[in-house]
Image 1 (cartoon, rainbow, N blue to C red):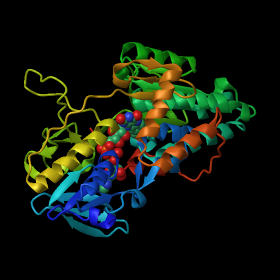
Image 2: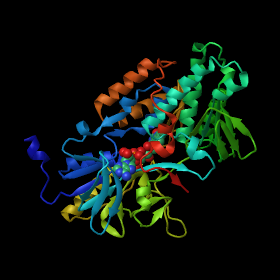
Image 3: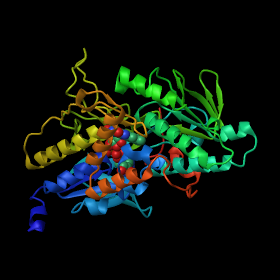
Length: 446
Ligand SMILES: Cc1cc2nc3c(=O)[nH]c(=O)nc-3n(C[C@H](O)[C@H](O)[C@H](O)COP(=O)(O)OP(=O)(O)OC[C@H]3O[C@@H](n4cnc5c(N)ncnc54)[C@H](O)[C@@H]3O)c2cc1C
């Protein structure tokens, strides 16, 4: 009976999805429910719930809790482990490298591109040799291990300047990820210091750098300012209107002439579309594939794109004087809604019915600042403190895609307390966490 309901309706076959993140995962799940025969080409065997990566980095959430296995959650979907190398749009073929390193191909009738974005690396000397990102579980875990390892190492460093250097962490990018990470990490380090003899709170320094003149402008004036005050209260040295000029081993030179001796550089300064998109040779905007309002590529009606990889016009915003609308921001919130919309449109397309435009009013954002602190703007309300925290945690529990993961994350939070009880396994070399190695699709230079 169940199998009968799952069987594809005649003609609803040959759909290939590239990527198993917010866009690809939810689109594949919806397509399957709509009785479409769908294949997902996935670089990893799981869907990563990225909004909790800062929690993984501080150790309040176990990495496995935010990795949702595809095999058990996308039942009925064919999952092919591999990395898409290129798409031949004329022969409707995806060329990929499979998990064993072999070249292979997948034919499609309809293609959904959802390979997400990569960290935007700027052409700054030394940056790619030293910067760690925060886009994968490996990077978050490495950061966690690095903080613990540096604290431990500092106990045997007698020279005060060298100890301070080892315990200086520079985060570049005061957007959502950078602010959450720095606020939570600064609190964690403060709470951990008493466990490390010889290390004082003054030895630990967090520096948050951004070229913009405010933190998290998307939070809006007063909430952004209150996040800034909180960061400073936690001892974070926030440098606004400043960027990075050069990176060397243990030294970051800022554009204001300051040289910071540091042990760790974290780069959270934005994203650009996955390199797979540029390789298509189709029109892009900031590395994102230009699609129309039904999420389809105008030049190829058998190809759709969503999420961070797609430049989707935001139909809830007015047109400018050239008739252009702003793009939907690269957020999980949009990727998930676009997934539902595109699944519906692909089915309509296969059935020969009209497609519907994608329109989603932003529901606001949630920012976990660690401990009892958060900021949230649910449906236009502006919240901070414990109420914002409750909304933030509640939102993540709601958005996680399975009951098991909700329970795991809730338990992780409950037992973490002020000082998550964790050890550094030193299992990851820095090279594994460098942005150029850790992210699918490699680096993007713009
Ligand atoms: C630290 C952090 C915190 C965030 N917090 C929030 C938040 O609170 N709220 C919010 O709305 N958004 C948040 N975001 C943004 C959100 O994660 C992205 O907007 C969202 O993941 C985009 O979904 P996507 O499907 O386009 O890409 P992704 O979720 O990145 O998925 C892309 C998938 O494609 C796979 N892939 C890539 N290249 C290939 C290839 N060549 N072949 C096969 N597979 C490939 C990847 O492995 C990945 O599984 C956060 C991001 C980060 C990094």
